[in-house]
Length: 301
Image 1 (cartoon, rainbow, N blue to C red):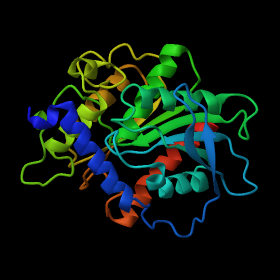
Image 2: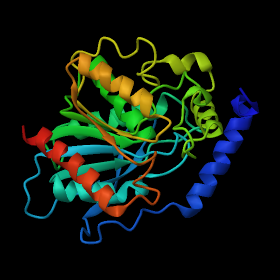
Image 3: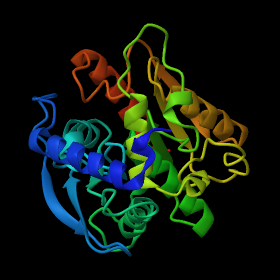
Image 4: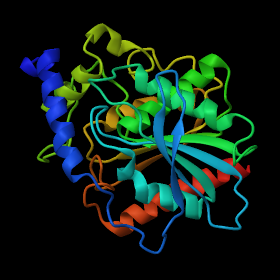
């Protein structure tokens, strides 16, 4: 381990990364044909009010589902706005409401705060009296957001609800115990997730190494993926060149053993964050269409 494993150093670097990202964060200009209909809302959680953006399906379309989305950023940076293209696409093509949450970031709010916030959002969304009352519930996220979707689904299993018809885990980090230096990258490739980044993200999010073995933080580590019978059906998407691919594949296998894997889709030729960082627009469209089809199937089954 390097000096980046020291919490005071990792916290400082994480804050610098978040500040730099905050100055430039904006959604990719994708899907201009989908203007979207959205509004700012606030979701109550045990850790205080959480900002979110609500996307509505096309006017006149009876929505049968609602999808809670959590953005990526290594648990320390990013924001809901970065997932605007995905949320607009899902609302338009899967005909669902989308609640795109802006959970609290580390190091200011560490594990398990974001996990509990996303789970609390699921409970709030599932409560009666909402605009989408009776709609079937999905949860998903990209990168760190995918990890939070997995954690929220596990909390729903542990707490006896709410019922989730689909969890979408899109290139998620699911093993924070194994250091990034021990996660192989494809030979000869300069991958997005560098070992130093993994060290900063993991330390800022969970400084206590022992706590990184918690099933909510590392569901793919050791025996944490055992005993998942009854967990929400899962769609797992991985990227061929992603340093984090192996742990998501491992978790997909555990979900399959539990009868909860809907499909594992490996996106060939791309790396972590391909859809947010300059990936081919038509490829992004195809993957999002695949994702939307699974969401639509889940909420109409």
